[in-house]
Length: 81
Image (cartoon, rainbow, N blue to C red; front, side, top):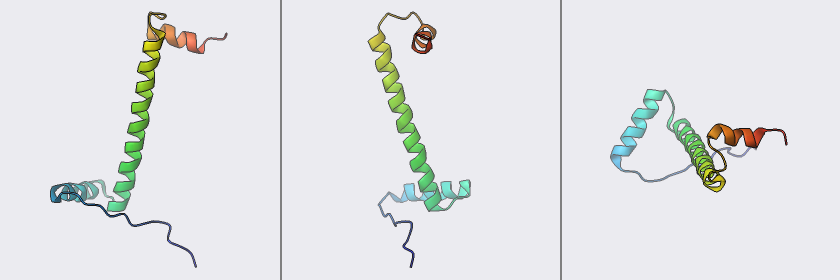
């Protein structure tokens, strides 16, 4: 006997949001579950990009005026030492 490979998730949203979700799924030709999974993947990508940009800013601040341009920074990072 094989077990279920998915779980049911239930949460509350305002009626307008539920309608928007249903319309979006229909427009994209997806079922609700498929759309939700895609939304989670997109959100995960967004969070990774946001963290990457935060780290870039941190690195730029830490490097101070050592580099006159982004190109000089990358040259320094990727040059043979």
